[in-house]
Amino acid sequence: MPVSLHVTVLLAVQVAAFLTALGFTLSAAALDKSALVDAEQVWNGSASQAGKVSARFELSGALGTNTAFTSIVRARVFGSNGLFPDHPEQSTMSAASKRLYVGSVVELELRELYLDFSFEDANLRLGKQQVVWGQADGLKLLDVVNPQDFSRFILDQFDQSRIPIWMVNLELFLPIGDLQLLWIPDASVHNLANRGTIYEITAPFANLPVGVEYSIEDAEHPDSLIQDGDIGTRLSIFTGGWDLTLNYLYHYDDFPVMRRTLTNSGLIFSPDYERTHTLGFTASNAFGNFIVRSEFAYNSDKYVSTNTLFKTSRGRDGVQSSRELGYVVGLDWTGLADTFMSIQLFQSILLDDGDYVRDRTDTNVSVLVRRYFLNESLKLEFLGIHHQNDGDRLVRLSADYELTSNTTLGFFSDTFDGDSSELYGQFDDEDRIGFRITVGF
View 1 (tube, rainbow, N blue to C red):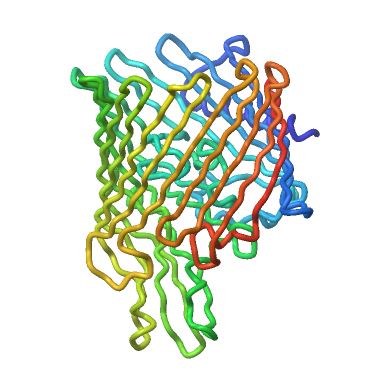
View 2: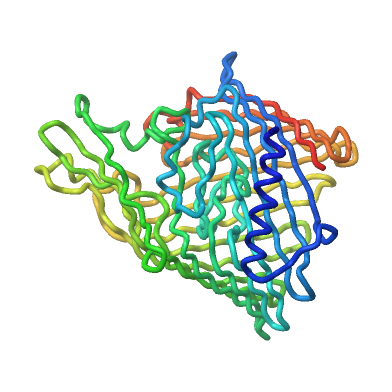
C-alpha cells in the first residue's frame, strides 16, 4: 500500500474514533481536505547531507453550529540522512505523542487533532495542538508552551519544529481583553539531536579539561499525567494602539539540567528536568512604516552549568539555579514596496551571582530582510543571527519561486561560523545548501 494511502487510512481512523468516542457523527460531504507535499535534498559541500519527502494531510469540518474539528497527519520518507538514526527511542516524548516508524525510513506523526467548542463569550479547544506566544524571529523567548524538535538545530520553521502536545485550551472573551487558560497534561520535552547525528549539541563538552573522559546517563523525564502537567494563562489587551499581553506559565524547562559527578573513571552527566515559573510581557505598536515589538520573560529558576566541579573535589553536581531575565526588542520597517526589514536584540541576564560557564549577560542580534519580485511570485530572504559574546554566527539565505498557484520551488543555504565551543560555531563544518519543491492539493 502506498505511503500516502497508509496516512489517509490512519488519519480517517483516528478522526472517526476520536469523534465517535465523543458522541459525534460526521458526513464525508462536511469535510474540508488539503494536502501539502514537500521534497527536499540538502548537500554539505559535494556530499549529500539529508534527503526527504514530506506529506502533510489535513481534515477539518463542522460538527454542528458551535463545534468543529481539525486533524493533521505528517508522513516523512527519508533518503540519504545524517539527521535521524533508525527508530529513534523518543524518550523525550509522552506515550500519547510519539511518532510511528514503518521500516527504517518512513515516519508517521499525528501533528494535531483537536475539537473547537464555541460559546457566546468563550472558545474551548481540546486535543493535540500548538499554542504560540511571542513574535520573535529566528530565536524564541516566550514561545515556550510547546517543546521544540532540535534534530535540525534551529533550521526548521517554527511551525514544523514545534512539537504539538495534548492540552486543554480555554479562551474567555472579557470586556478588557481575551484571557487564555491552559492545562497541559502532556509531559513531552525538547527533542535534542541524538548522539552521533549531524546536529548533536557538543558545545557544552568542548571546554572539558584535556584527557577527561565523560559519559551521559539516560535522562529522568517527567512522566506523570497530573503531577507533571503544566498550567498557564495569558491576558491579551489592545489599548491606545498597543497590542499587549501578560503571560504566566508554570512548567518544566524543556532543556535538561546537565548535573555532573566526578569519578575515578571520569565525568558522568546525569540529565534531569526542573520546574520554573515564567512571567512574561509583550508589547507592539505601529508608527507609520515602523513596528516596534518587545518581549520580556522572567524565569524563577534557570539551571546553568558552573566551573565549580573542576575546582573542587568530587560530588558537586556542576550546576546552579539563578533567576533569569530575558528580553527581545525588535524594530520592523516596511517603507519600501515589497520589502520587509527587521532587526532584533536578544538578551538573557542571570540575576544571581555564580561561577557560570556562560556569561551572566548573553546577547544575540538578528537581522531579517525579505523582498518580493515578479508580482510576489519570487521571494528572497536573508536572516543573520550573531552571537555577540563569542562572535559566532548563523547566516541563512533562501529563494522561493511560485511556479504555479500550487507549486513552489525553493533554494536555500545555511552557513555557520565560529569555534567548536560556541553555540553556532559547533556546527562550523555543517554548512549546507539545499533545494525543495512544494506542491499543494
